[in-house]
Length: 386
Image: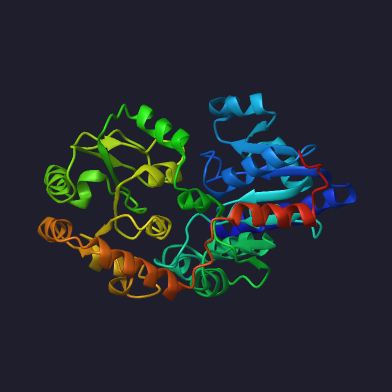
């Protein structure tokens, strides 16, 4: 009963908000959010920075839960507001372009002349998301609200043919326009030399010559680092044996989890602001079912799946295709992980990554940011080029 009342109250707000249609949109204004106001990151960040660099006379607005943490953006002429505030709702109703990477605020309507872009926050096509997954855990009113959030969108970005068909079309039940040019955040991973980003990450963690192993498991309701069962000391030893050099292990929890400091043979990377910069600098990625494997596969650097709870995850979430077909070395325990690392064949792995990209029908080219920004400029913005 409570869920029903909340849902219909929000629907009333949705229709009442359409009064705003009597007033004109704010031209050349773009509103950005990332992970519900938590970060300055992901695809919205890279779109924002491209527009900031390329266009004059465009107002960029970012909404954050803690705007005081992002004051540095104001020095670049970007307007900072609080997520879920009245000012945020104002820009949602009147900004010419809205860019987000999750479903949010289904009860705020979108006008026909507004461009509402959902970039999403994962590429490839692995664990199930969207409507079918929500129906397992939530009430029908939650599902209805989720569907409305997808209905608000009038442009999705896609990384692959599989993502278009299985994730956007089927799981999100979306039938609107899709820009199939890859993910803007992944353009970075095509670059061979970004000394500034390398220096930034290494200085942040006070690294000298150490190689980086990034451990970045996907979302769980409660699991912390130790719950995964990965032996970090053994992992580091195996990395040294197989790849040489000294190693540091960075542990990054999912952005929707609390970021507690990790007290193991690893360093917490959960508060680092940009996952793509970590992927760019990582020499090895270890995860389980995270779509970061799609991003990292573009680099052809070693990636291992540690799936200690595979049966439980299959029951809870499941995948679009069998995990055994993805092409990544797969271990269920520490002994199998040891064998995978010590016997890692880099030539075979690169071939598997090429096949993986082909099987999913990759759209990634390294030019996704430019293409989506050209789309935005053509459809909406009249800003002069710098």
